[in-house]
Length: 351
Image 1 (spheres, rainbow, N blue to C red):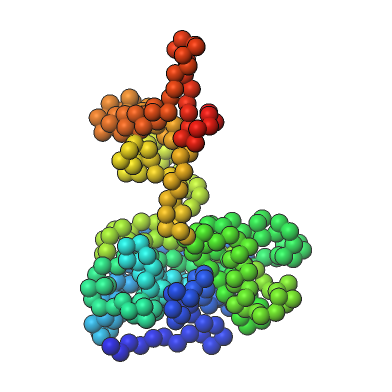
Image 2: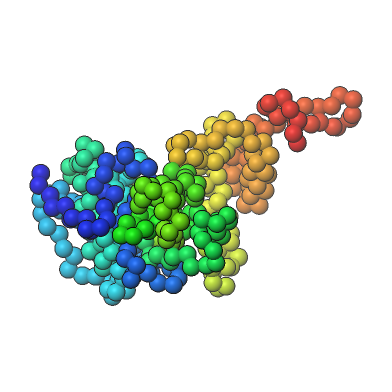
């Protein structure tokens, strides 16, 4: 099936043209030095516009698979002046099976370019066809402009990177002469890559001479990141860290709603035996199954308190199950009336 693949920039290469299995990080072309601004700011793309852009991406994927051309005949005024680079990841059962990175251009056109490159990337791995497109979920990151480090000393000095870059919040870029590479904050989280390792990986892409890296420019940038909950349906904005709310958004009703959503999520994460699943490790695609008794006890108390506060049977059942499981480790002290202690599964009383 013939497809038109947009050529990479002359002095940069697009990661989407490489087999996914060979990507240690999501490495891509960076904006030119002239496009940099003095503040690390994410592109201004609202949730409703995120949905609109996702529809453009999906329609582009469908048209490309059908050997047709699709061009949107309308772009919302709020997006008319937005220019950025777009990263599109096609996910099937949560796994990335196609990645496309656009050049910096008007956001709608950038989404289409990244979508076509992601589809080409997936086809290299043997995944294509309309059935495939209809099953995948679309993961999108819009990258803001790079802010280079201009503080005192050199970026390689101890502590500078850690004070300049907040992993998971900032993406990181490395530039030397005509070569530039960057990786998104979401990619660092997904692959569980420490900041220093991410910088070293990028550095190897721009120079084979370790001595020259002291002359490289290190930059940070922000992204807007969203993905489809279900194929072709609503999208969710992904955030790390705290979200600032306006004062009028914090009401008794909104707090109650947040607590109720958290309780339902805890139920979703509850294991059949009663405990709650713990930390998920994206890089290993597995959960941490260590006991974590102190955390489990705190979760049990929170669920029990919520059940008593709401009186809802589903929360009471959830609390009863985790309490019953944790109570198996309570051992009475026969020498002291009414006294007991918690024996953790490793036979050591840490509590």
